Length: 360
Image (tube, rainbow, N blue to C red; front, side, top):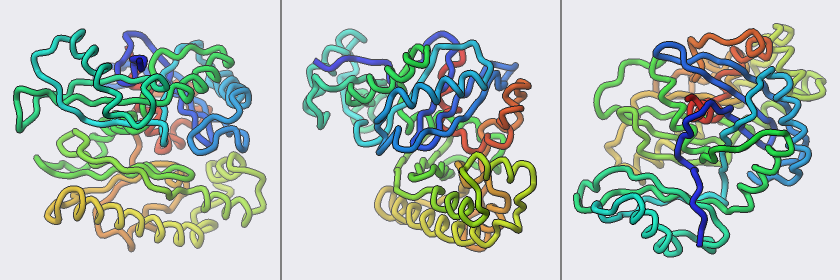
């Protein structure tokens, strides 16, 4: 039988979000501050080349060493973590279940039926579910989100955390972590009425994830192969730098100005705008109908670190847009500020969503 795992449920304790990517490890710890949140700890460390490939950990020892360096820089004493999985090993589907089942009956029924819904052998996956509510067309049934991940992927990530002397309490899915982080953007957006659609693009090094939000709920998600790594490598080579951390430091210090990177950024901005237009056109025509409008676009992720991106995008995007910052307005510890949490914040959508699940 597949093993039930807390892929979606929040634990009642303080946890640190740990985002293990192909190029970096990011750690973020949040705490409540009145009606909002504050940043207790943050650090980011470059991942050794080829330690993570195609969403899979290839070298868990190298990943563990990277996590340890980030943990030491963060200054946090927290060793309890929430992590995320993504890529082809993750499967999710909304299914219908009789509304009259109690929790135990529902769990048993899902375990019994799961092999009909999951494209992997049931003994090789961990799975979880979340009741979404009554089905609009058949109120006698509940819509249930079923999520599964190959167990070896989870075990490899857990092993890397354990080698870094951390304990994994919750395994989330990057897609849902991004959705979770979107609620931190509300104060930065224009007032959107009922049935208005917000398109959030989180641009990573190699992949970009899109989520369409309507009235605070995700109604559509898609991931596509496009990222900012090509731009980063072009800037590193053009300015004869050694790696991304050096590039980032020179941008933060002002040694590299917006004018210095404007030509490369303009080419990237045009490509990004083409991808955004393509994805939103696909959403409107194939997923939601030709009359489904997009009212505002939010862009977050690695390329937002480069000054002048918003000006470079303006000629190419027909929608109103903002550069999103999930940590906007949050107080941060001295150590987190020293680790550039303020300037890195627009790149922290996924880890911010994870950290939110870890707030007691």
